[in-house]
Length: 423
Ligand code: NIG
Ligand code: FE
Image (cartoon, rainbow, N blue to C red; front, side, top):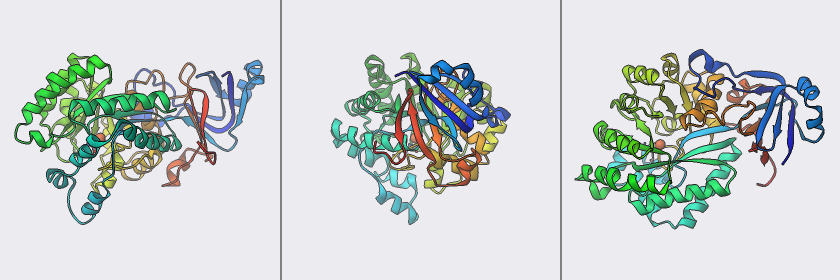
């Protein structure tokens, strides 16, 4: 390995100072920018970040041995962290997309046995290899869009063998692919068709049968539930999240997406790491999340694709909630792998400044998956997960909307993607 020296960046976005706790309020606008910045990487970690001339003098010996990357006229930033994806699934649902364009709603399609049920059928039928190949290709695309770590949920099995297969595929991808993966069990993604008339029996299966197996097999770190009218009630969701806690699984929740349903309140009460979606969150819910430090993971692609009004990012930030952004990559409500597009939407549809969007997709996203101390900013000692953007100023990131500005991706100190090169 050895040294890598990235020099002359027009802007080096360190996003520093929030490794212990996520950035909130005004602090989200401070990207810790160093003009004419440089980064010295030693093996897998960041050794130093600072002004180019200063580092050249201070580390002349190290730089003599280093691989040099000239980032003149470019922006150097932390790799994006995507804290909410349904990475491992089989098949696609463009037929439902077409139905929605003609007026059908996401929930209607699901109630008729499509939606999550449709992907569950396809995922149950898919082999390990098939799931692995489809997901590997998606991960490549994430990397091309500047993502260096993502969270991946199960939830298209809803029977143990298939949930386990999804989690095992994600573990294998974590080993083989450059992108790091953090694992979430989501056995309670929807009420399976088989338990339509006995939802509490399925909740019991999740809490008493599946969760112990998740813990025993060490396949996940987080436990998630879709708390929504017609899916899991707040009371059932609480049972599922509390049961997970007993097995050491940290709670996450899909909350207040379609209707206000006190999901954010529940997240604060159970001490969730994050509450995600929040299109219809109540003021009280935001207040309680701010008090408890629950990260709001906002998913602008989902609102966009479901043609719904976006979550109010501005209001959440002003309420003191730490905000993160994510793709929610999944085949039904957000078939996208593009964090850059999520930042575009955050700025243009959610009242967030470009700087707040960048903070939300880096250090705050790292906190949403409990990785704030190791990734999400460019500070000495952290993993060298770095992206070089082919723009001179961070404001251009969301200004040139719908464009992927990623030029080079460095993961653990190694170049793993370079625009124009084959992977
Ligand atoms: O986060 N809201 C629930 N779950 C996913 C959608 C999954 C699907 O439609 O396949 C989401 O939007
Ligand atoms: Fe989701």
